[in-house]
Structures are given as structure tokens and as C-alpha cells.
Image (cartoon, rainbow, N blue to C red; front, side):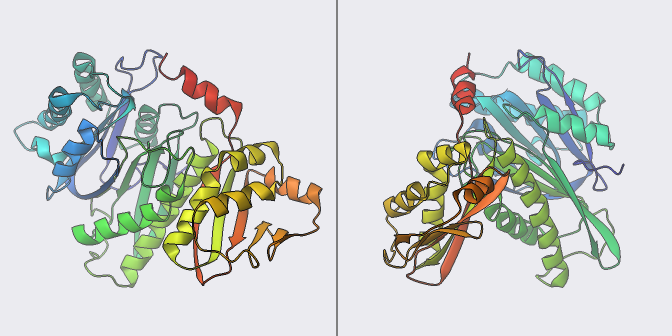
Length: 403
């Protein structure tokens, strides 16, 4: 089977090992390397409290070339003061030093962390883990899979995706790995996303493409409406597919953007279906809004509404909770034209309940994925958000997380 991991694009090596950060013995140090250097772009959490690796990577992402990403799981290195910043820089310095002969500077290495907030990194274990991961670097699917496993926290499944797009007669590959199962809300929350491509593309267009793809995928998923201190998404472009460089927003650029979107969309669907305690996922589409901002606000209000999430978990077509969530969002709406449907079944229309087959509606909700559509009746704008059901397991997982 073809390599479907983050090492599928030409020019990338990866590894993941257990360094002892996690008491469980699961992998907790990962390294992604582009020996020839790559153009890079990133997006980060909008939380006002940011972890040390976010602060350091925001600086390092400006480097003309990036040679590696080092990531640890099990410890967020957040709210750890100046020592945390020094530890994040030390991780970059360690990886840069392994290239030898001063070839790579610490600022040409990106760093990310995920896990428990407020704990100092066990740097002796981190150092040994980085050295072990370096020795295990591989361009194979095994290397990519090991990296994807090393970034997991409460995830129960590895999350990877890959697409190939034909550009100027050459195959260009885009691949990615993501972690995230809880504390997820729009604007990159408790998500680490790593993407690699062998496309040759200018830095500004790479950054533009990443921002657009993330905005339409990862930034649309809410598990619990919560935001983290560590959220990060990186994309590295090696340029080794030997396709004509993308230097302007032409047809080739659009095809690249479409493929990048598909990779991110695949990853976000995997995230939603592996959310903490989740058994099903849904999409909320709001139409007929006065503005796109109001449509998005209403969609998120439904996706975040605990009673809606509980109803989805129970397979209950309780449209009253959906309407209540929309009304509480504060957006403009026409009560006499307000409507709601589950997939194609109307359950509330023009401000009134309507007769519908409850068994059929319940069957829709019990699918792994369904769509809730709300029509506000005051404009022409629409937006969407992804949500998941709320189960007892979500409480159990988060009650036991620290202990």
C-alpha cells in the first residue's frame, strides 16, 4: 500500500519514540525533518495565554527555511514562565545540533507541545527522546506513523490524510497528521496539525493557502467550545516534486489549495469522530442570515449547545433545543420564517412545528454524521460549524485526565 503518512511527500523524514514524559509508556516525542530545508507557514491559537512553544514558533516561522519540527505530547509546557521558554528553545537547539557542522540554526526548527498545563518539561527525558527519535528518522510509512502516534494525547486513533494533485505534468503530494479530541472550539483549540508537501510555492502563497484551509476545516470544529494555549498548525513545503513553482494565484495555486483543503477536511472529520466520548458528528448549516458573521455565530451556538449535543447522543430529534440555541445567539432572525430541518426532513417550518416521521428523523441523528440546517429568513448569507454529541464518557475522560 502506498505511503499515506506525513512522509509521503518527497524530502521528508519522521520518527516518534517514548521518552518517558507519559507514564503510560506511549510515544511522546516526534520529529519531522526536511534535510534540504523547506518553506514554512503556520497558524496559532488566538488564546491570550500562549504556551512557550507557540511563542517560540511564532518567531521561528519567519525563517526563510525551516529544517525540522520537534513535538512532545503529555506536557503542554504552558504557563511555565521563562524556564518554559528556555526549554522550548533548548528543544530547537538540540535538534539543530543533530544536523552537525552548524548547518542548521535553532531558529530554523519549529517546536510544539501538547498535554497538561503548568508542568515543567522533564528536559533530561526530552533530550534522550530527541536523540532516539533522530536515530530512528525514516522516509517510510513507518516513520510517518510513529510521528503521528507521538503527538496523541486523549486521541484513541491515529489521524492522517494524504492527497496527490497533478500540477504542470508532475505529481505533487500533500500529507498531514493531526491530534485533538477535547478542548476543541473554532479558532484552533487543542489541536496540533502538521502538514507537508513537495510543492514548490512562494512563502506568502503557502501562508495564504494554509490560513484558508484551516479556516474552512479545523476552525469549524467545536467539541466543547473550549480553547487551548497550544494550538498550532504548520505546513512545510520541500519543493522536491520538481513541478513548476507556484508564484502567483493562478490555476495551479487553486488546485493546490483544493488539495490542501481536502487533506484538512479529511483530518477534521477524523477528529470529530474521535472526539472525547463522541459517538457521532454533525454539521450545522445556517442560511438566510443578515451577515456571514451572524450565520457563523448562530451555527456555533447550535453546535456548542449542551442540550442539542445531548439530544444528538440520544438520537432524539428535539428541534426545540436547536431553535432555542439559535434564539439565544443574539443574531437577527424572522420568527415567522425561521425553519429547521434534519438532513432533508423539516421538523420546524416558518415559525411553526410541522408533522414529520419521528422514527426517520431519529434514524438520521443516529448516523455517524448528519446535517442540521437552520434558515433565519432575514438575508442571503450562510455559514457552518461542525459539532459532536455529548456523552458520559466526555465527563469521565476529563475528570480522570490529570490523575
